[in-house]
Image (tube, rainbow, N blue to C red):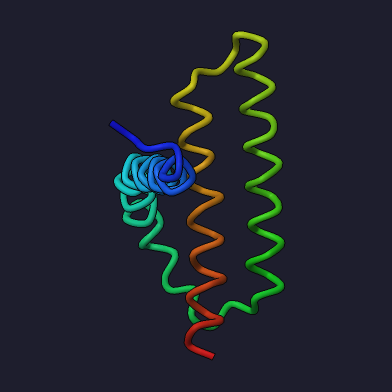
Length: 100
């Protein structure tokens, strides 16, 4: 049983576990999409501003997929695939920043 004084810690741990589950669910889709775009080459030399523009384009595609899902045109899977694209471009930006 959870003690009242431990509720805050329990809630934080539950929140972190939920985040880990979301990341683990999206990861295989992200990797599949990275493999599908491998023919485009590396993003190592793509300016961060250009990657940001591509990220914003993907955010707009995600917005449209969410709207289409609400209208019954798209599926939850379509939205999740767009989430993976957004996450991938964010990862590319982070990777370029990490390498300097």
